[in-house]
Amino acid sequence: MDILVVGGGGREHAICALLSQSQRAGKIYCAPGNAGIAQVAECVDIGVFDFDALTAFALEKSVGLAVIGPDDPLAAGIVDAFEEKGIPVFGPRRNAAEIEGSKAFMKDLLKKYNIPTAAYETFDDYDAALAYLRAQGAPIVVKTDGLAAGKGVTVAQTLEEAEKALHDAMVGGSFGDAGSTVVIEEFMAGEEMSILAFVDGETVRAMPAAQDHKPVYDGDKGPNTGGMGTYSPLPHIDPAIIERAVEEIVKPTAKALVDEGRPFTGVLFAGLMIEADGTPRTVEFNARFGDPETQVVLPRLSSDLLEIFLAAVNGRLADVDIRWSDDAAVCVVLASEGYPASYPKGRVITGIAEAEAGGDARVFHAGTARNAAGELVTAGGRVLGVVGRGAGIAQAREAAYAAAERIAFAGAHKRSDIAAKALAPRR
Ligand code: AMP
Ligand code: GLY
Image 1 (cartoon, rainbow, N blue to C red):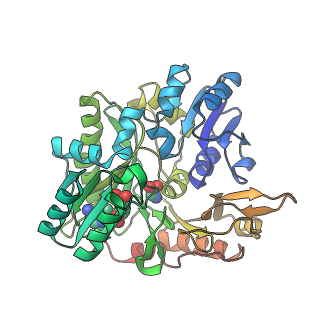
Image 2: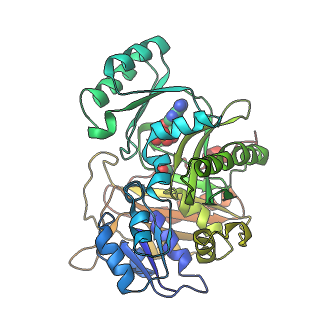
């Protein structure tokens, strides 16, 4: 069966790499893809929002399945567009993807179904929002309602910071329409983790938990990014806490979406805060695979990814075989100088073959391209995800960093403390 994967980052490279190992996979196309994806799939130069061209391509090639990677086209209804043309597609429809596309929708849903999350209020009036902010005091969290490339959230330690964030969003228009509605939320203290799950209606098959590192610098300093590194599993977290999060948060949310007439098919991704007493609460939901969570979770899958996608699309997810290996994976992101603000492109990358030569590391491309001379060059903020494997986190981490050291491009930046937390004693 031929497959079309939509997207062009590290997540899509990991998805294409796994699909290429499937027994039943024929040709894999990826739109638009990147220079690394081109090694495992045929890249097609169509943008992720060009639904007409994407569906026309899928029909022309008679693909048996489309798989959608990124959040924005999901929020814009790409799955509905494929379904209208009768093309099987793995991902949530627009009305289910709203769980990521609108924080107000997500928070209202969780409140209605008593699913644990921070207390909040939603505002579209600036004066009312400001009065509420002042009454609550700091620390407090201000979030724009719509998608804002991960930059619409301010965790404010002082009231002054919170007031500035509110003003920027609602009066200054920093986030355009995404900021005209704002969610003001109680600050939750604790440790974050990500649980991704294959979902088809009420059936939830959770993947092993992962942890991301969002701030750009060591010690969680600096502005938030799309994610500077991940690891899985989480040996320092009691498996009972992870199980509790699946039972008390992920499963009830999938059921709530069904009850609301918005059944979810695809990957539901819960961002969770584990509080000091071990209670998990929801920070956010995403309607897709995480990036770079996928780069550490999918390589640990020992079952056939295509069979899982097809089972979900055909309502058979409850019956499909899903097994995971016991080993560990650590992903270290190599980013461009300046990221997450503006960054240069076109810098020549060397050392990937050397990084992979040892056999215990794999490099997923996030933002890469070929220049006119055919050289591999940087083409994004996050450039590469270097994934190390090993029997435990310590070995996987060593493998990832040893491989990352072999790769070079001018201005490359990485965090040096990815997965350090996992080496602490179990809580
Ligand atoms: P979000 O885009 O909602 O995931 O928020 C981005 C990041 O902000 C999260 O990964 C958390 O680190 C932080 N954050 C969001 N909401 C809260 C909250 N209520 N309390 C503490 N931290 C939060
Ligand atoms: N790594 C966080 C995300 O994919 O949203």
